[in-house]
Image (cartoon, rainbow, N blue to C red; front, side):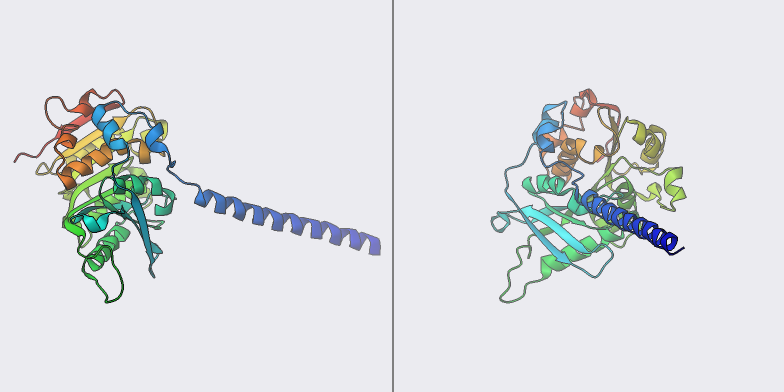
Length: 317
């Protein structure tokens, strides 16, 4: 009888050890996965381009890049900023606000932010997990206002009077795309944005099932929407819904939609970056060459073999 009890306790001990080891292993895997970049550091050299303008702006810009972060008592933990290293020698700089997709925090796509910073932008992102409502984007703009005005004696603030609050853009992928819509329509600073980019995201029944409510009829910001022809995007951001959102956007702004045909949902975060950067270069830096990618009789995106279902509505001046 005693031997049977000892054997029984041995079995229980072994089971408990297996459970503990499994939990520890899963936590370790989870930690590793949470720190794997969603954007490869060398993506600018590997992503294919189908036009000269797309290739130009997918390449790195001329500025070396620096990083700054500050922790905050918010659900999104901290603000993460990239900016040109030579910011002291530059005029006020435009800003691009990033809105996170599901499971893709700012720290997982630093390469994307560094790329834009190399072209003369300040970028700001957070560690927000649920960015669909645009709240983290709103708080990012408020923080930018503080940075632009704050100068404490004896302490350097490289952003003091260096942020052009009249030239702010916003971009988001997947859930973050819905965050973009809410940031530019529902949040306090909704009218501050001069250009928006929505990647692999739109208003769908799936989004409504998660209670991620948006209203694209309220959009009054120049908007670029790009999704892919991949199977996942065919469910998350199907052409029919992209078209509906495009039609909902008021005609008093410029709007463009397109689908990329050599990738799927996750890759769209950075596969479209050539034209994302181009969009911001035009609207936030007034780059005349960037304009040719989307507008005019010979707009590059119309003949780019990597893109299809392109529609462009340019606001009448």
